[in-house]
Length: 509
Image (cartoon, rainbow, N blue to C red; front, side, top):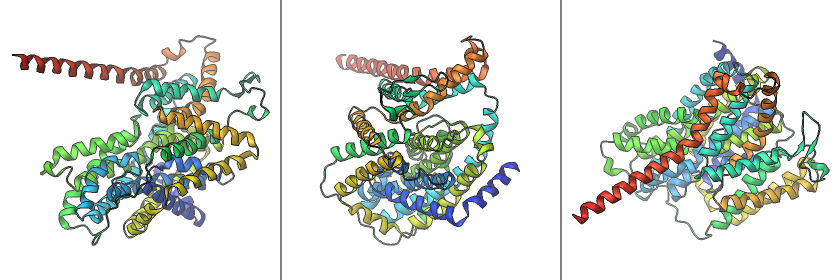
C-alpha cells in the first residue's frame, strides 16, 4: 500500500499543468530524435544539460524520461521506412520491418511497433514501480564497504558490457577516473591535477564532459562517416489499422518481448540491444512460419520493439534505487543527477520523493502520449527524415558550444568542451566506448570517499571489503563480469578451431 500511495502522490505531481507540458515536450522531442538516424537519447539529454541547469529538477527529469521513452518509440520509424536504425536498439527491427515496408505493409509495421511499445512500456513501468522500492530495501543494508563494492560493480558493468572490448572499456574508464581526480580533495583540501588553472579547482564539470563526449564527439563521428547521398524511403501506403491476423500474430510477441526486456534492463546486461536480439531469436523459434523471418514477419517487429521499450523501463530501476547505470543513456541521466547535486540511491526515495514518484508517474502518462503521437502522426515524423544532415549536425555543434559557455560564462569551459569533444571523436574512431568515461568521472570520487570511510571505520583493515557478505558478493560479481567474457571468447575460438580441424580431417579421409 505504501508504494501505491507514493505512486498516487507521484501522479499528483506529474499531472500539474507545468509537468504535463514538460512530459509532452520530452516525448515529442524524443520521438523526433529517435526518428533521425545517428541521434539518440544520450546525445540529446547531454545537449540539454546546460539548458536545464537552473530549472526545477523534477520537471527536468520528467522531460529527460520522456526523451528516453520517446526515442525508443521513434527509432523504429527510420528502421522500418529507411532501413537505417535511428537507435542501436532498433537494428533488429530493421530486418523485417523494412521488408514489410517494401511489400507495402510499412503502415502495419509501424502500428505493431507503436502498440507493442505501449504495451511493453506500460507493463515495464509497472514493474519499475514495484521493483525499485524492493531494491531500496536491499540497499538500506549497505555500509561504506558495500557502497564501495556497489560502485565497483557499476564501473565494471559499464566497462565490460558497453563496447566490443574490455581493454578499450578500461581505457575509457581510466580516462573518466583521471578526470574525476581533478580539483580539490574533499578530505585533505589539497589541489590535484589542476595545472594551475583556477577554473579547475572545483573539478571538471560533468556537464562539459557529457556534452563533449556525447554531443560534440558523437556528432563529429556521425558526420565524418556518413555519406551524404539520397536515401531510399519506403512510402507509407494504406491504413495503419492492423488486420485480425496481424493482431493474432502480434499480441503474444508483445508479451514475450516484455518478459525478456524488463529483467535484462534491470540486470547489468548492457541496455536494450541484447533483449531485442533475444526476442527476435525467441520469436523465430516459436513461429509457425519461421521461413518468413527476414522476408517481413510481423512477429519479428512486434517482439523486439516490445523488448526494447520494456528494457528502457528496467534500466531506470537500478539507476534510481542504486545509482547503477546499465546503459549509455542511464550514464547521462546519472550525470544529470550530479548536475543538481543529487545522488541516486536508497536515500533518494526519502529525500526526493516528489522527484522519484513524479518521474515514475510521468512514464505512465508519457507512454499514453506516445501512443497518440506515433499512430496517427507517423506521416509527420517521416518528414523529419528530409532535414539536410549538414544543417542538423552544425546546429547541434553550435547549440553545444553556446550551452557550454552559458554554464559558467567562461571560455575555459568552451576550450574544455572541444578538447573533450575531439577526444570523444577519437574514441569513437578507435571503437572505444564513451559511457565508461562518464560513469568513472561521476562514481570515481564517490567510490574514493566510501573506500576511505570503510578503511577509517575498520582502522585500516583492507579485509573489511571481503569479510562483509554483501560487499564480497558484489566484488565477486564485478570480477566475473570482467573475467567471463574473455574466457568465453577463448573457448569459442578453441571450439571453432577444433571443428575446423575435424572438418579438414574428414575431407582428407
